[in-house]
Length: 242
Image 1 (cartoon, rainbow, N blue to C red):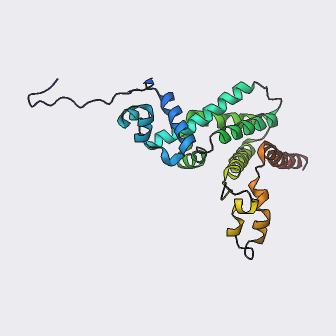
Image 2: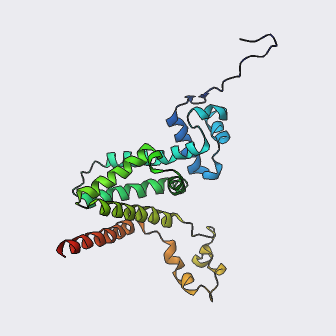
Image 3: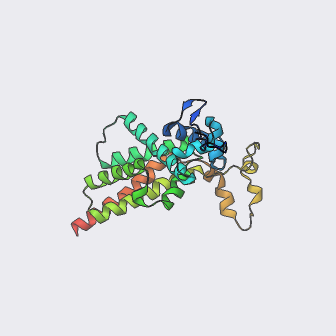
């Protein structure tokens, strides 16, 4: 109600946008689509509000800060991973098959949303374990449960979990690193910008650049994961026989 001076209560930013009333899922879906199209640098509350047809202030009911919005995007990636795992429908025949399935579907999510992948590293570096998004924690639980079912003791479970996570996220990061210097060039050397690399100081890098530019794909991911897991199972067998 207006007071005698003619001023009324502060206007509440409406959360009814061009697609109807907002909810958290719509906000995060739109934010992820924006990042997919234009990269993380394009994401701001103001720009997201424009995409949704609402004032930026209306978004703070669904993400209390920019960091909360970024954490929400990480959760959206892991929710998509859960959906892929559920749609796969395969029953894991053993713990190794389960880890391969998680790795394969995580890789697929990351290749679908390459612009958002850096958030998996930066936000998990910034957010303590207990404060991570629920879908991220469920992913941790899923992997740890598989490792425990393999018979590893608690220290070994933690060790293999760290190694699995490092291999998976490291592999994805290498796969997604840009290597093409000039996409309009048809000549492979100029396309990769090899003329910018000193033949005297970087001869091996120049020779290997074309191979490095090729993605290893899911086959490379699986081969590396097998080698990693073999190293742990061989170590466990040796310890048991000793």
